Structure formats: C-alpha cells, structure tokens
Image (cartoon, rainbow, N blue to C red; front, side, top):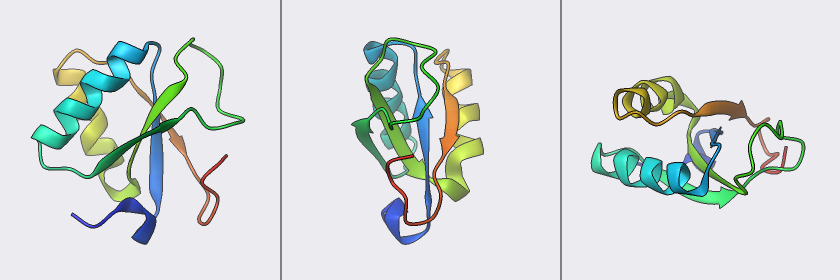
Length: 86
C-alpha cells in the first residue's frame, strides 16, 4: 500500500504504549500501511500514551474493526489534509 501521506491519513489514539505497539503489529500483519508517530498536539488527552499510529484515512474504519476483533481499543483522530500535527 502507498503511504498515507499520499492519500490523507487518520491517526489512531491508544490508552497505553503497549496497545499502540500491538496495534502496529496487527495492522502490518493484515497488510495495511501504518506508521507509529507521536500523539498529535491537540488530540484528546484521554490516556497517558504518547504514541499514536497513523493509517490511510480510507482504511481507518476497517483498521479500527480489525483492532477491536484483536481486543485493542483505539480512537480515530482525523487529520486535516496537509496538517500532520493536529
């Protein structure tokens, strides 16, 4: 898959660092593009995890479903086009 920067991206937020890293493993194993990134400024501060996982915006809902089936809770934080820090 092409990197999400070419198609817009969504950032997935997690409550723990372990959940973010487990999510990365699950997402890659399922054949989706992802990248571990710092939690974006302005993202809801619901959890202590400073990591997030970027995925292609078009894949976000499918990835969330995949993670839910694996028992990993995630919230989608959508980024505006060209704004990878909000």
